[in-house]
Length: 293
Image 1 (cartoon, rainbow, N blue to C red):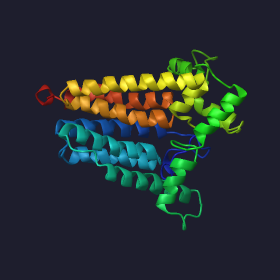
Image 2 (cartoon, rainbow, N blue to C red):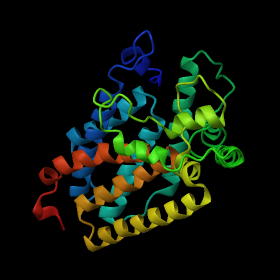
Image 3 (cartoon, one colour):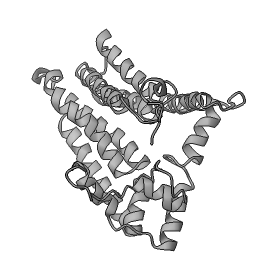
């Protein structure tokens, strides 16, 4: 079970802790973000008008309500990347660092406060460091070491099971009752951290997932393929002469890498598709031939 944030828990989770409109709110935020990015790219990273700025603010608000810190951060990063690509301005690294600290730390404090924890002596910076580097999320420095150590010691290799699960994921369970359900996040929670009865998942990150499935050879091949595909995406952007639509697609690919390396392959693909589909649907409306570069 995955709970919503401090605000979202009031409106999107039942008394039993079951999510109701959680996913729909997240999808709505993604669609609003895409509409903003397309218009922003079409205008060359300049002003887009009140309506589209409101769309962007509503997208951020939806993620804040659900306490989706990564989504809030990636929405902001996406806008900054699009601005850099279509206007040829440098990416504001300092702004990115400061924004990351306040988004991750600020929403982290809000979540801890909603749980009744004492946050009087806890700073935003400390909360950010704990979430990013010590808790089993994203860049936790000990998580990959634990995965490598326990999987290799006990020979718990899955030999592609978590990747095969992605292929059958679209098939409803009502049509295939015995559909395999090997998720890398549940595997890490139960086998690596020893929480056998837990139903919540701990993301291994793409590198960790590669090791879980194919050991060191998996990491080598997986990173090579990721780099090769990233090179193809970059070359496509350059050949398009910074076409606004291609710039938005490239931006979505880049921010999807955050989800890929922070969560797993399934998480990265879902994040990408949730943004790619609206781009495909609305792209022709926003990016007209006269503005395609």
